[in-house]
Image: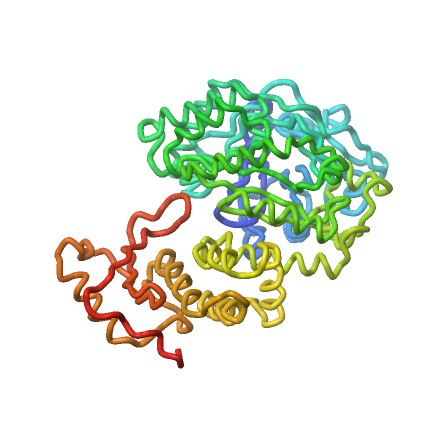
Amino acid sequence: MKTTLTAVICVLNSKYIHSSLAPWCLSAGVDAHCDPGITAEVVEGTINERIEDVAQRIIARNPQVIGFCCYIWNISATKQLVRLVKSRLPNAIIIFGGPEVSYCAEKLLRAEPLVQYVISGEGEKPFALLLNAVSRGERAENIPGVCFRRDGQAVTVPPYTPENDPPSPYTRTYLDSLKGRIAYLETSRGCPYSCAFCLSGRCGGARFFDLERAKKDLLLLANSGAQTVKLVDRTFNANRRRAIELFRFIIQSYGNTIPDGVCFHFEIAGDILDEETLDVLAEAPVGAIQLEIGLQSFNAKTLAAINRKTDVPRLKKNIRRIAANANMHVHIDLIAGLPYEDLDSFAESFNTAYSLGPNMLQLGFLKLLYGAPMRENPEAFPCSYDEQPPYEVTETPWLSREELSLLHHTEDALERLSNSGRFRRTLAYLLEKGAMTPFELFSRFGHFAAEKGTDRISLDDYTALAFGFFSRQGGIHPDVLRDRMVCDRLSTNSSGKLPPVLRVRDTALGKAIRELEGSSANRPAKGIRRGYALLYSEHCLAYADYQNRNPITGEYALFKFHPSFPEMPQRPAEC
């Protein structure tokens, strides 16, 4: 008699816009390696929705086996989900896999009696072979990567790393499931580096998939309706010739077999970019490519301690060159909590990174992942960290708890003021005329804002908070600050409305608008909203038409008009 078995592969994504590739990779492994009659269906959810709703979607399929993809951001919710599902499907076999459990299988099998198996390492083939064993009533011993219990004791095996390319997950079912969400593209696995805080290089160097397969998959995702295709290759340009070939393929296909408006996101090592690669990137259509460049730190002793080999002068030169092209979004990363990085050292790294002119500077906090050398060797990497996921560092010999708290406030201000793109002109003015370095600006205001309270604060109220704080700083003229903030608001908010703190009641506004639009050439196109405001420090009218955002900055073009009537009055004192 033909054996049948139904499995569900579940993942809780961090947000709806994200679409983890892992369950689809496992599904492709089922198609490639499972016996006839074994089927697997993917069920997605998010950590922000009711766990009961996700559980119901799984239960409705009545699976005999359920696999869960586990990460630091979803492991707690996933364990809750398992308890709910098992209360309704007590005979279902539960399998965990993913980076969060690959290096702590023994601990998990001891602590979670509802979990029967843990897959360590890459899961496509082990998961499929395990389903075969379950359907045949066989034991799971000798399946690569599969950890289990024998006589109540955990039996663990090394993480599985195959030599062959995995089967492609990009089926019609996967493409139909995207519905405009971020699409993830994998063209290699592993990493040539072995940073002490990371797992990517744990199982050997990088393995690059077939180049023609990569091009085919790239085109599939570019035409799936997704606006962003994010490559998950840990160091995309580790193979220089291959990276150049794929960059060129995107550039030459853009606007043809690749639709206009699709953006490809790459994680790269900035210091190994050579002249040819930089020249190719300079030719990319505006907005077609985003680059994420991990810096981690500029402290040489820190980089050596975490086994991060970096040519710092070349890295800085390359980032400045890419940013100057203004044709792609540049995202760079720093990590707080690394060895030998005290507050002064981190401030120096922060100021250096900010000076490179990235579109986004992400301030992250060190997390001690299972399997990472920094967690496994506490003598060499002494620190305190939260025992609950995401295992964030709470204190180091170089950074106190209070200093890490200050850095969290700094990160909040950095996200809201800089990475949001809503205060670009404001920040340029504050840093030019004020007496603060970038780190001082964000850390001081971040501390101030935290004391005032920013939980669920509106953009208008946050703008008022920033205006009140910065207008009292030395070297800052309140009228000029107000006008910079007005220009930022007009160019980034398509409502065209100013927040109360920036509004001025002035009859000159209507007069200036009438003069501007007295010429038909200066009127907005039909159906296009326009925002206006008077700038008192420049004695002009600023306006923006809300169409055609800049794909790099996210801004609408801002224009200035100087009326012919006599000089406008100064801003009323009471405003």
